[in-house]
Length: 472
Image (cartoon, rainbow, N blue to C red):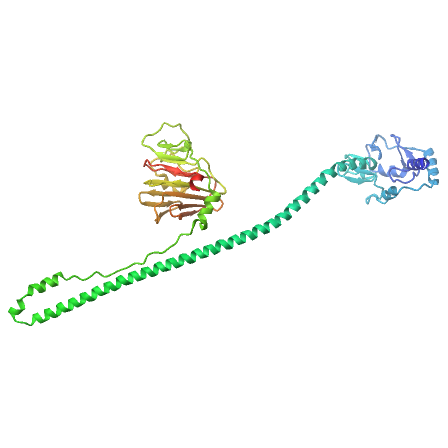
């Protein structure tokens, strides 16, 4: 076995590193490595300044090489030794460079490409780190060996994810089925509620019809009696009129008295009631808005007008007659008794509630940060183009103020207002929480953040921002 190995090494030493075949006319260059004369000449063909060794990359200064006759004799001896090459060696010989038709014996560390001896001197790889395949292969085997365990772990993780996703599909199916039954049940309950409500309202309408019909018949009877009285009196006057003077004047005072005292009944008029219904809370869209999007809004004292007093928890504000000595702030309102929330919103959906109770005057809504704060002799609510979307109360008047002024007529006087800001859709909605009705909705295009806006008016009653727990 050792003899075979030694012969194999001897045979390998008689091979050219470039063509991997037995040396033909062997020559030796300055670094001591041997090549076929034709192979080294071809490798150095286009080189003019330096001449690197194709095997060790040693740079020879001159294009010269010496004939090695002794190695040539040894090569002839090696040819006579019939040693079977290994299977691996035969497989390697199958791969050759498509461009130069030479055996691939080098590896470029920069481009991760296998090269022949001529490729390493081309412009693409000339300055790259090139290793012999015998050196590169063990190095990269070792590197890849370190990757095996991490990749196994990644495979396991992905397989776990696949298992989890498969379970989620089953979970989704169960949840959808449950939700489907839940929706069916909700709609059945809603249909039952509407059916009962319809029957109740129709019964109320029928009862009202019977009541009005009874009163109408009574009125018709009164008019019939009145007509009979008029006809009787007319007949008496006509019979009196043809009698003699003495008989005519006798008891004429009674006729005058009866004519004067006779009054016609009032015509009966009616107006049907307006029938409506209120959905129970579980079917209210506002209920879902409150549950999903309510945020805790706090007042920003740095923006408060000098006549406004803010509570310690920054939830309540009221107007006072005395001006406070506050430090100057470019965001402070000097124009009117206004204050902003502490946080602006430029995306998503937010909902908050404000308790106004029986305040005579207030303004609630949202505004841009650029809203005027120092301009004098002009109501800030007139400057609608400056970015203010709000609801205003003054006495018994309610107005929506945005790009134009809209007068509102709430059916129930609101004591608590809900404000819903949808930055993505560009909408601000105002709700009367006393009857859970929509007061007004603004549709606009918002750029930049919008800030909760509060104006107390000049009465001393407070505005209070409700906390989440206050509204639940």
